[in-house]
Every structure is written in C-alpha cells, then in structure tokens.
Image (cartoon, rainbow, N blue to C red; front, side):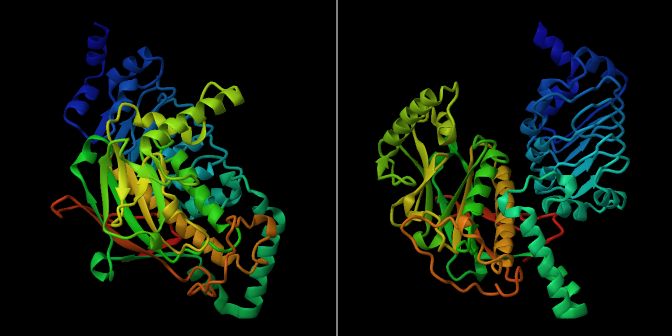
Length: 488
C-alpha cells in the first residue's frame, strides 16, 4: 500500500524509469505539496535513475535540500537546474546556498552549473576536477577572493576552472611541503628573470607554453596498434573495458612517479567511487606483448604475480587478503577494513574472475584487485598502457580515462617545468629500492610543456574481430579546460 502511494505521488519518476528517459522536469503547483510531505527533500527514488542527463526542479519554496545520493545516483548528469527554490546546500540559482561541497567533483558528466544569486563566499577547488564542465555561473555571490570574483563577473568559465585548478585562493586547496611559500617565491623570481632576459616576446611564449598538449594517434597512423579482444564470458562479471597507450611520460625526476601513483589513488577514491563503479590499471608498455585478451577464469585456474608478491592463484590471493584484512582490523580496533581490502567484497559470489592476458599468456591485470608485478610502472617508464574496467557502464570507463590522461598531462608538464629547481629536494626523491634512475633525455623538455603527450588509440573487439569500442574516439578527450589543446 505504501509503495503504491509513493508511485502515485511521483508519476514522473515512474514514467522516466519505464521509458528510460534522459531528461526530467519537476515543477508546477502539485510539486510544492509533495516536497513538503517528503520533509523538504526530493524523493530517494529520483536518485535511482542513472540515465538522466538533464534534471530541472524549479519553483518549489518547500525544497530545502535535494537529499543524499545526487552525485552517486546520477553519474550521467550533464545539466542541473534548481531555480527559485529554498535550498540551503548543493547547487542552484536564486537560493540560499552558503557552501558548495567538494563532493560536486563526483558529478563526472556535469556540463552546466548555475549557482548565481546565492550566499557563497568560496568555491571549492574540486570543482575543477569535473572533467566535462563547460558552463558555470557564480554571479551574485560575495566571494572572498576578489580576483576570482572579477572572473565570475565576466563569466570566464575557462579562466575560473584554470584558476581553481592552479590552487587559487578561492579554491582553498591545501598545499603540501613541496608547494610552500619558499617554492612559490622561487618560481616568482624565475618568472621575473625570464621576462628580463627574453623581453617583450616572453609573454606570448608563456601563454603558449602554459598549455597542455595531447596528440591523438589514430590506429591507422600507429606502426603497431594495440588491440584488446573480449571474451563473451566477461559479460556476466565485468563487461566494460577501454584502453589507451600514452607515450612521452617523464617519471624520473624527483617525486614524479609518486605524484602519478597518488593521482591514480585519488581517482579510485573519487570518480571510481572506491573502485565500486570502475577500476584503473596502468602498465609499462615495454613489458606487454599484444594483442591482449580480456576474459574470465575460475578462481582456482587464474594465476598472477600481484604487485609486491609472488605468483599465486587468484583464489588463494583473495583468501590471503581477507585474512590480512581481518587481522589488520583487529590490530587497529576498527569496525571496518581499509586499503585494498575494501574491494574484496566486489568478488563475492563470482564463479569466474575477470583478467587481462597478454600474448605470452601472462595475466597482467586482475580487476578490481591488482595489477601484475611484471608490468609495474617504474621511474624509467615512459610509455604506458592504460585500462579502465567497469561492471556499470562504458561511458564511466571513458570519463575516467579522460580524467586520468588529463592528470597525466598536468603531472608531465609540472615535471618538465620544475627540472631546474635543483632536481627537486632530496627528501622528495622517491626512488624505487634497488634501482638507480639513470639520465634520459626528454624531447622538448627544454621548452617546458611544449612536447605533447601522445595518446594512441586502442581498439576493443569481440571474438570475431568486430569493433566494440575505440578510445579515444572523436567524442572522447572533449576537455573543457582552457589550458588543454588536443591535436587530432
């Protein structure tokens, strides 16, 4: 009876679910009463419509907050319009918004965001982590950062996002030791010295050099394109996969490798939602022999050399990790497990485990648990194979791959620009035990940021060789960031 009442109260949601709609408008006189009855929130059922691209809720004075689950429940949301309501938190025009949560970064598909005429004083830097955001409006707020407020008045979306990404005062990004005032002062002095030495032409050079360049190499242009063949068995376990080859990374100087691995961890925590919607794996391309096979194997037949461990059967590895998790939980006196052990439940009840196998028959990836020690990223790695797998959707794989490649370009540019800072301080060097990084010339490094990362297309095909997906396609890497140029 209660379920029937809920269905009658929100017929728009039932219709949207039945017709798999991508747009939804909630407005009109009946909305006010229904929202008031729901305690000033939108119904939880709304956040179970993962196909929604556009959502508008307008003219409802009873709406105080949308309710939990917006970012996680609507992963494909491009446009969010919440006008003339009484919101106290989240994002909407003409409301009473005082704070925008950093959780906004979870809206990986968000393209349009209107927060005009609210009571915001700061904008979280995490907003710049929304990979598809192209149009934002913050006018009518009293921001503490006057430089940011000036950008907002001019509706300079690209400049705002670039400013936040760089850690502007309005972004409230916490800087680490390597980003302290001494380092900033040193950079300022170097910029001034360059201007004195190079004269009037320097400003144009800096503008050009400040851009991140990504060059897409199509399958037809690559001398040895990599292909992933998909076995039908993965459809019942983890059906979606995209891959890409990235050439030109420089991970040798200072803590470049550490930055790269940390960015991957952050993506796993945020966009991948703790690996529950997708998993990233990165490999040293030189250690891989293609073509690759994405398939499933019984836990007792799947063997892999996990990162930092000896070769083991997948069944034994999972059991070992479960025991380690329980022991760690007891030692720390916690109710829940942490680290890698949090993802073990994703395999519960699976009769077959997914794996990526190279042409030598070696398992190089066991998502969502681990990569192989054989293809581990090292400081000497310059060419990488990237994979993103998911049990949720192909688009999520593509969105996360976009974000990963953008982050790699930012790290590479930062590395090139900071090579002259005494090779970074000794305490920042994160050398791998047993390895002594040797010198390696990086083409274009002397013109910091001018050498593009090359992104080679990877084709995913079925057993008959029919194309399932190619990445990056024409619609991928459609980055809104002003500091990124994609050459196709």
